[in-house]
Image (cartoon, rainbow, N blue to C red):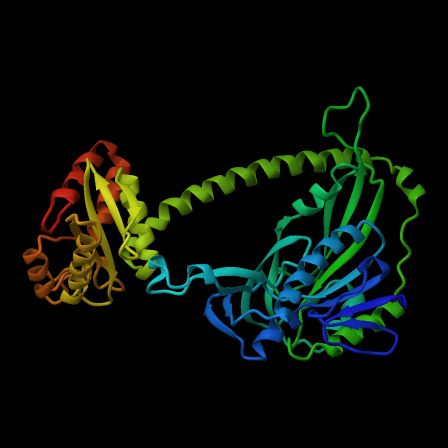
Length: 466
């Protein structure tokens, strides 16, 4: 490995330039080899007890400091510079972890009616925003078998007891590379698998780019490019870690590995040499890639359509703001106009000139009288603020975690007896989310029933059947 080495993390050793993620970084293109310890990004906050887990891969960071802002700035700087230097013979190693989304409080929305009952959040950074490529990972704990394909990494993996995630090569996306180099080069991505799990899923990969000149002759169609690369760029190697809190031994192995293995880059004149059958094989590969891209594009469209349909199943089990959002979407699909309430964080629908305030509740038991009472309070506040009376409708997802066939039975009513009584006394309509879901499905099959369904919603009292 060249003596011209940079480590970004917390590692320190003689002969190696080391900087932390919150420090002012040197000029990255000056280095032949860069080791990125990306585990230290999230560790900086987690070890200080400054992050709160929000679920899945989302965390909330406490009040942002100047050091936090510097980390966020350096993450984007590293990505920008990696795109630039990977055109050349640079070697980049990254101790890689699945992405974590870091949110912070959005101060401009604090205390507003829209966020009366929940904290407004906005994205601060993503821990893998430093990476110039996009590639998905699948997290799975418990895997132990590791097959090291590239023997030069045997030493790196010798103490691994298992793996926690694997890469999805088909998800590789390099749009940032393509847009940056498009004026001069056609950038083609390549992935080499370094190690896999027992079922050949890659857990360590090496990425590099071949750069092809654009074909600009009279006989060439727009966007065509030469099959033989003008040159190959540097490499970006994504590697797992044994212990994200103790990465120094792995960094030392990478430093030592470079000293033992010097790879001679192909000279530029090699690009002009063609092996018999090379051109025709490359053409076939390009054709198959094009066919695959067409299929993948269609698959993405179909998957998007399927996800759009399936999201309405949330009517049957969700609660809180997510249930409110999907109810609003379902009503909008039926043809109702929606707008925010000026007195609550709920919303108002308009049907044929009539308006109704919508309250949405999701309970693990029956919808109770207190849920209806909250809507009554909001209606009175609306009257006090606007001087106008408005109808109230409560959409309830009672017994939301129970199978549908076990709901709305004698011992599991969607709306309790007291809830129905309060609703009746105040002319409030009650709609179960299961009823709204059935109406949504009916409207998908028979759109002509939308008007009939909306009329029942806007004019109904007590428990409304759609």
